[in-house]
Length: 152
View 1: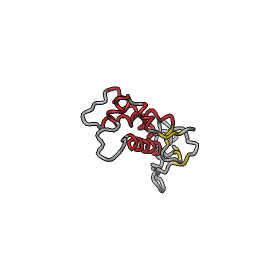
View 2 (view 1 turned 120 degrees about the horizontal axis):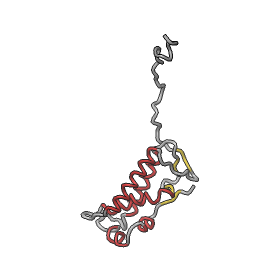
View 3 (view 1 turned 180 degrees about the vertical axis):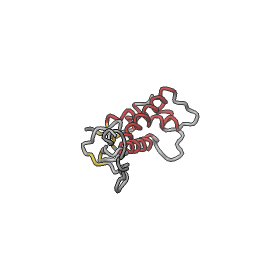
View 4 (view 1 turned 180 degrees about the horizontal axis):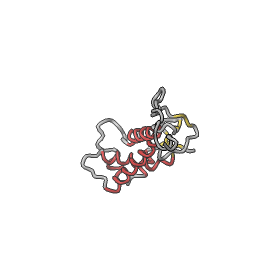
């Protein structure tokens, strides 16, 4: 299945032109031409972390790729991060609702409720199992009770 790499153009297509011009390049303390690039990289790693946290999921061998079906939700996260880093700017309730929906979606991915499609170059997740290592202890069966006493 197709996994994709997010680009700055993808994020900019999910924003209004005013948001792109006003916020993509403003209030940058470090020497960056556009802070969209590092924000996208962080979001991609976060999404891959959600996917990897469910041990049955596989990841693409390319560390910059996410499932194509997760693109819109990942862009909601990235857009929110770009807009909320501006002091005094309020993105609005619609943007906040999309961000909250994306967070809920990725929490479900981490719990295994939503499963991504496997990548063409899939590799196993390196997350340890939740089962404890070693022998599991179980209690001995009950000796009494109506079913076990043959009617006595």
